Length: 236
Image (cartoon, rainbow, N blue to C red):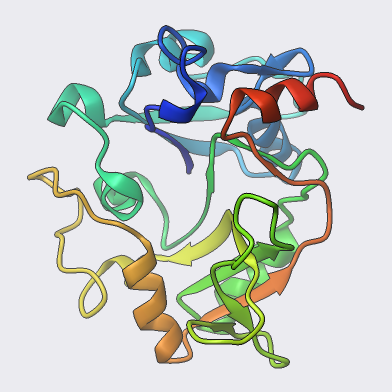
């Protein structure tokens, strides 16, 4: 699942008439980078949630995008803006899309640029066999998030409380059970459009030792401002 429902307030005026995941980075829409990476990893079914100018995203990619991949990629859309008038926050959007998702699934934000990240079958299978509720990829703290988000234990567990914290890259593997009771009370499909943040679910599961993590040291940018976008487009 690629999260593409945000308004992109900090990116205005660039996002006044273009959804942030469609802003171009090095010649192609920002969200196309992870789409192609997922396809290269052998993952051929994708869910995209939308809200702000979401019709542009479906118009850009359709249901069977041609991305020069060895196998076809199929996309299902969860149009939160059309159905509820706006975005449902991260967990709310994931729960809305649960009927379209398998028991184990990738999620990442459509406004994150990590061109070298590999979505591998090995990582997927390792997580599926682990019994954990989520596996997060953390990155060194960028200047705009100096305090970080979560810690990392020597045993590879994500920590709610830690002296050294890292930034959550938004790239993660999840198990459906994280979005069910006791961690989430919103019913599958989120029929009433309840806005639900993700962090409280993760923190509660971390406190029960149910979230694993690892540090990713490859190129990674949260494309949150016009300046960061411009920098990506002026460097290799």
